[in-house]
Length: 287
Image 1 (cartoon, rainbow, N blue to C red):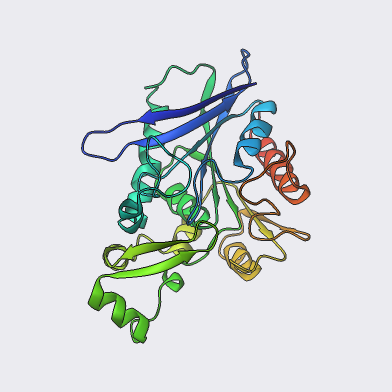
Image 2 (tube, rainbow, N blue to C red):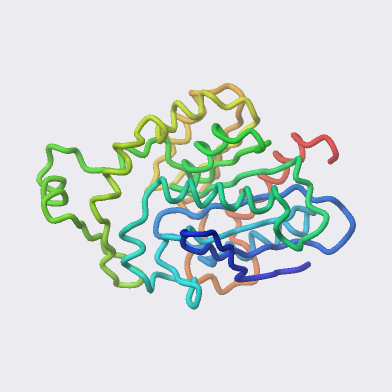
Protein backbone atom coordinates (compact mmCIF):
# COMPACT_ATOMS: atom_id res chain seq x y z
CA UNK A 1 0.00 0.00 0.00
CA UNK A 2 1.39 3.39 -1.07
CA UNK A 3 0.98 6.62 0.91
CA UNK A 4 2.23 9.51 -1.23
CA UNK A 5 1.97 12.71 0.80
CA UNK A 6 2.08 16.49 0.48
CA UNK A 7 1.93 16.90 -3.25
CA UNK A 8 1.23 20.44 -4.44
CA UNK A 9 -1.36 21.34 -7.07
CA UNK A 10 -0.62 24.78 -8.51
CA UNK A 11 -2.90 26.92 -10.65
CA UNK A 12 -2.24 30.35 -12.09
CA UNK A 13 -3.39 33.19 -9.80
CA UNK A 14 -4.72 30.70 -7.23
CA UNK A 15 -3.46 29.57 -3.86
CA UNK A 16 -1.77 26.13 -4.05
CA UNK A 17 -3.52 23.01 -2.82
CA UNK A 18 -1.66 20.36 -0.79
CA UNK A 19 -2.91 16.81 -1.28
CA UNK A 20 -2.18 13.18 -0.37
CA UNK A 21 -2.95 9.97 -2.23
CA UNK A 22 -3.31 6.39 -1.00
CA UNK A 23 -3.44 3.33 -3.24
CA UNK A 24 -2.33 -0.27 -3.62
CA UNK A 25 0.25 -0.77 -6.35
CA UNK A 26 -1.23 -3.30 -8.77
CA UNK A 27 -2.78 -3.39 -12.22
CA UNK A 28 -6.37 -3.05 -11.05
CA UNK A 29 -8.10 0.11 -12.29
CA UNK A 30 -9.25 1.87 -9.16
CA UNK A 31 -12.26 4.15 -8.64
CA UNK A 32 -11.04 7.50 -7.37
CA UNK A 33 -12.36 8.90 -4.09
CA UNK A 34 -11.84 12.59 -3.33
CA UNK A 35 -12.31 13.47 0.35
CA UNK A 36 -13.16 16.96 1.61
CA UNK A 37 -12.51 17.97 5.22
CA UNK A 38 -14.82 20.19 7.22
CA UNK A 39 -14.79 23.49 9.10
CA UNK A 40 -11.58 24.05 11.09
CA UNK A 41 -10.35 20.85 9.48
CA UNK A 42 -7.35 19.71 7.48
CA UNK A 43 -6.32 16.62 5.55
CA UNK A 44 -4.11 15.23 8.33
CA UNK A 45 -6.65 15.68 11.12
CA UNK A 46 -7.19 12.78 13.49
CA UNK A 47 -7.61 9.41 11.80
CA UNK A 48 -8.05 10.62 8.21
CA UNK A 49 -4.71 9.04 7.28
CA UNK A 50 -5.99 5.65 8.46
CA UNK A 51 -9.19 6.23 6.51
CA UNK A 52 -7.14 6.74 3.36
CA UNK A 53 -5.22 3.53 3.97
CA UNK A 54 -8.41 1.55 4.53
CA UNK A 55 -9.85 2.63 1.20
CA UNK A 56 -6.54 1.89 -0.52
CA UNK A 57 -6.56 -1.67 0.86
CA UNK A 58 -9.91 -2.11 -0.86
CA UNK A 59 -8.52 -1.04 -4.25
CA UNK A 60 -9.68 2.54 -4.29
CA UNK A 61 -7.46 5.47 -5.22
CA UNK A 62 -8.03 7.84 -2.28
CA UNK A 63 -7.25 11.56 -2.42
CA UNK A 64 -7.51 13.99 0.48
CA UNK A 65 -6.49 17.63 0.35
CA UNK A 66 -6.42 20.89 2.24
CA UNK A 67 -8.73 23.59 0.98
CA UNK A 68 -6.40 26.36 -0.11
CA UNK A 69 -7.78 28.87 2.40
CA UNK A 70 -8.12 26.47 5.32
CA UNK A 71 -5.32 28.16 7.27
CA UNK A 72 -2.53 25.70 6.53
CA UNK A 73 0.57 26.40 4.48
CA UNK A 74 2.82 24.41 2.14
CA UNK A 75 5.44 24.23 4.88
CA UNK A 76 2.96 23.36 7.62
CA UNK A 77 -0.24 21.79 6.27
CA UNK A 78 -1.30 20.76 9.78
CA UNK A 79 -3.29 23.17 11.98
CA UNK A 80 -3.65 26.87 11.19
CA UNK A 81 -0.43 28.89 10.89
CA UNK A 82 -2.05 31.26 8.35
CA UNK A 83 -5.04 32.80 10.08
CA UNK A 84 -5.35 35.53 7.46
CA UNK A 85 -6.04 32.88 4.83
CA UNK A 86 -8.52 31.19 7.17
CA UNK A 87 -10.37 34.48 7.57
CA UNK A 88 -10.59 34.92 3.81
CA UNK A 89 -12.03 31.47 3.19
CA UNK A 90 -15.55 31.11 1.81
CA UNK A 91 -17.78 28.57 0.09
CA UNK A 92 -16.82 29.79 -3.39
CA UNK A 93 -13.14 29.16 -2.68
CA UNK A 94 -13.85 25.65 -1.43
CA UNK A 95 -16.02 24.68 -4.39
CA UNK A 96 -13.41 26.13 -6.74
CA UNK A 97 -10.69 24.12 -4.99
CA UNK A 98 -12.72 20.93 -5.34
CA UNK A 99 -13.27 21.63 -9.03
CA UNK A 100 -9.52 22.16 -9.48
CA UNK A 101 -8.78 18.80 -7.86
CA UNK A 102 -11.41 17.06 -10.00
CA UNK A 103 -10.09 18.65 -13.17
CA UNK A 104 -6.48 17.84 -12.28
CA UNK A 105 -7.16 14.13 -12.00
CA UNK A 106 -9.74 13.95 -14.79
CA UNK A 107 -7.33 15.53 -17.28
CA UNK A 108 -4.51 13.21 -16.24
CA UNK A 109 -2.08 15.95 -15.20
CA UNK A 110 -0.48 13.58 -12.69
CA UNK A 111 1.84 10.58 -12.82
CA UNK A 112 -0.40 8.08 -11.04
CA UNK A 113 -1.54 5.01 -12.97
CA UNK A 114 -4.50 2.62 -13.01
CA UNK A 115 -7.13 5.17 -11.98
CA UNK A 116 -10.68 4.52 -13.18
CA UNK A 117 -11.77 8.02 -14.18
CA UNK A 118 -15.21 6.72 -15.13
CA UNK A 119 -15.88 6.17 -11.44
CA UNK A 120 -15.24 9.35 -9.46
CA UNK A 121 -16.67 9.49 -5.94
CA UNK A 122 -16.86 12.42 -3.54
CA UNK A 123 -16.89 12.11 0.25
CA UNK A 124 -17.26 15.13 2.52
CA UNK A 125 -17.21 15.44 6.29
CA UNK A 126 -19.21 18.10 8.15
CA UNK A 127 -19.12 21.33 6.10
CA UNK A 128 -17.38 19.32 3.41
CA UNK A 129 -20.48 17.14 3.26
CA UNK A 130 -22.49 20.12 2.08
CA UNK A 131 -19.84 21.11 -0.45
CA UNK A 132 -19.68 17.68 -2.10
CA UNK A 133 -23.46 17.58 -2.50
CA UNK A 134 -23.42 20.94 -4.29
CA UNK A 135 -20.49 19.90 -6.48
CA UNK A 136 -22.14 16.58 -7.35
CA UNK A 137 -25.21 18.49 -8.53
CA UNK A 138 -23.01 20.67 -10.76
CA UNK A 139 -20.53 18.22 -12.25
CA UNK A 140 -21.76 15.18 -14.15
CA UNK A 141 -18.45 13.29 -13.92
CA UNK A 142 -19.25 12.37 -10.30
CA UNK A 143 -20.83 8.92 -10.00
CA UNK A 144 -21.46 8.63 -6.23
CA UNK A 145 -21.48 11.15 -3.40
CA UNK A 146 -21.29 10.50 0.34
CA UNK A 147 -21.95 12.84 3.25
CA UNK A 148 -20.36 12.03 6.62
CA UNK A 149 -21.98 14.05 9.43
CA UNK A 150 -22.75 16.63 6.78
CA UNK A 151 -24.65 19.89 7.00
CA UNK A 152 -28.01 20.31 5.28
CA UNK A 153 -28.06 24.12 5.25
CA UNK A 154 -25.27 26.68 4.97
CA UNK A 155 -27.49 29.66 5.75
CA UNK A 156 -28.21 28.56 9.31
CA UNK A 157 -24.46 28.65 10.04
CA UNK A 158 -24.68 32.47 10.09
CA UNK A 159 -26.13 34.67 12.80
CA UNK A 160 -29.41 36.38 11.89
CA UNK A 161 -28.94 39.78 10.28
CA UNK A 162 -31.02 41.38 13.03
CA UNK A 163 -28.79 40.07 15.83
CA UNK A 164 -26.31 42.31 17.62
CA UNK A 165 -23.51 39.84 16.85
CA UNK A 166 -24.18 40.11 13.13
CA UNK A 167 -24.34 43.90 13.23
CA UNK A 168 -21.01 44.02 15.06
CA UNK A 169 -19.49 41.64 12.51
CA UNK A 170 -20.64 43.84 9.64
CA UNK A 171 -19.41 46.99 11.38
CA UNK A 172 -15.93 45.74 12.31
CA UNK A 173 -15.47 43.45 9.32
CA UNK A 174 -14.26 40.53 11.42
CA UNK A 175 -15.63 38.01 13.91
CA UNK A 176 -13.44 35.66 15.95
CA UNK A 177 -14.17 32.06 16.92
CA UNK A 178 -12.00 30.32 19.50
CA UNK A 179 -10.41 27.01 18.62
CA UNK A 180 -10.46 25.22 21.95
CA UNK A 181 -7.79 22.74 20.88
CA UNK A 182 -5.18 25.16 19.50
CA UNK A 183 -6.24 28.11 21.71
CA UNK A 184 -6.30 30.34 18.63
CA UNK A 185 -8.91 33.01 18.01
CA UNK A 186 -9.73 32.37 14.38
CA UNK A 187 -11.01 35.25 12.23
CA UNK A 188 -13.97 35.24 9.88
CA UNK A 189 -13.87 38.33 7.69
CA UNK A 190 -17.22 39.71 6.60
CA UNK A 191 -16.48 38.70 3.01
CA UNK A 192 -17.53 35.19 4.04
CA UNK A 193 -21.13 36.33 4.43
CA UNK A 194 -20.98 38.60 1.38
CA UNK A 195 -19.85 35.66 -0.74
CA UNK A 196 -22.70 33.57 0.61
CA UNK A 197 -25.33 36.23 -0.19
CA UNK A 198 -23.97 36.76 -3.69
CA UNK A 199 -24.26 33.03 -4.39
CA UNK A 200 -27.12 32.02 -2.12
CA UNK A 201 -29.02 30.09 -4.78
CA UNK A 202 -25.93 28.08 -5.69
CA UNK A 203 -25.19 27.34 -2.03
CA UNK A 204 -28.68 25.97 -1.33
CA UNK A 205 -27.98 22.37 -0.34
CA UNK A 206 -31.65 21.38 -0.48
CA UNK A 207 -31.88 22.48 -4.11
CA UNK A 208 -28.65 20.67 -4.92
CA UNK A 209 -29.85 17.42 -3.35
CA UNK A 210 -33.14 17.55 -5.24
CA UNK A 211 -31.20 17.74 -8.51
CA UNK A 212 -29.09 14.66 -7.82
CA UNK A 213 -29.71 11.66 -10.05
CA UNK A 214 -26.71 9.62 -8.83
CA UNK A 215 -26.70 7.33 -5.78
CA UNK A 216 -25.73 9.10 -2.59
CA UNK A 217 -25.15 7.96 0.96
CA UNK A 218 -25.79 9.91 4.15
CA UNK A 219 -24.06 8.74 7.34
CA UNK A 220 -24.58 10.46 10.67
CA UNK A 221 -23.66 9.73 14.26
CA UNK A 222 -26.62 9.32 16.58
CA UNK A 223 -24.82 11.37 19.25
CA UNK A 224 -23.56 14.15 16.98
CA UNK A 225 -23.92 17.40 18.93
CA UNK A 226 -22.17 19.61 16.35
CA UNK A 227 -24.46 18.83 13.42
CA UNK A 228 -27.57 17.15 14.72
CA UNK A 229 -28.85 13.93 13.11
CA UNK A 230 -31.96 15.80 11.96
CA UNK A 231 -29.77 17.40 9.30
CA UNK A 232 -28.99 13.97 7.88
CA UNK A 233 -32.68 13.15 7.95
CA UNK A 234 -33.38 16.40 6.08
CA UNK A 235 -31.01 15.28 3.33
CA UNK A 236 -32.80 11.93 3.23
CA UNK A 237 -36.21 13.56 2.78
CA UNK A 238 -35.19 15.66 -0.23
CA UNK A 239 -34.29 12.86 -2.62
CA UNK A 240 -35.38 9.22 -2.79
CA UNK A 241 -32.25 8.10 -4.63
CA UNK A 242 -30.25 7.76 -1.42
CA UNK A 243 -29.45 5.70 1.62
CA UNK A 244 -29.26 6.89 5.23
CA UNK A 245 -27.33 5.22 8.03
CA UNK A 246 -27.24 6.27 11.68
CA UNK A 247 -24.11 5.14 13.53
CA UNK A 248 -24.78 3.92 17.06
CA UNK A 249 -22.74 5.88 19.64
CA UNK A 250 -21.24 7.96 16.84
CA UNK A 251 -20.39 11.59 17.59
CA UNK A 252 -19.51 14.27 15.03
CA UNK A 253 -16.13 12.70 14.22
CA UNK A 254 -17.26 9.10 14.80
CA UNK A 255 -15.09 8.81 17.92
CA UNK A 256 -11.88 10.05 16.26
CA UNK A 257 -9.96 13.01 17.70
CA UNK A 258 -6.79 14.96 17.02
CA UNK A 259 -4.16 13.83 17.42
CA UNK A 260 -5.07 10.18 16.83
CA UNK A 261 -2.32 7.96 18.26
CA UNK A 262 -3.73 4.50 17.61
CA UNK A 263 -2.85 2.40 14.57
CA UNK A 264 -6.50 1.37 14.29
CA UNK A 265 -9.65 3.26 13.44
CA UNK A 266 -12.17 3.83 16.23
CA UNK A 267 -15.07 1.39 16.06
CA UNK A 268 -17.59 3.99 14.90
CA UNK A 269 -15.38 5.41 12.14
CA UNK A 270 -14.53 1.88 11.01
CA UNK A 271 -18.27 1.27 10.58
CA UNK A 272 -18.54 4.45 8.52
CA UNK A 273 -15.71 3.39 6.24
CA UNK A 274 -17.08 -0.15 5.82
CA UNK A 275 -20.58 1.14 5.03
CA UNK A 276 -19.15 3.57 2.51
CA UNK A 277 -17.08 0.89 0.79
CA UNK A 278 -20.07 -1.45 0.58
CA UNK A 279 -22.26 1.34 -0.79
CA UNK A 280 -19.78 2.26 -3.50
CA UNK A 281 -19.21 -1.37 -4.48
CA UNK A 282 -22.95 -1.94 -4.77
CA UNK A 283 -23.17 0.95 -7.24
CA UNK A 284 -20.14 0.14 -9.39
CA UNK A 285 -20.74 -2.86 -11.62
CA UNK A 286 -17.13 -4.03 -11.87
CA UNK A 287 -17.14 -4.99 -8.17
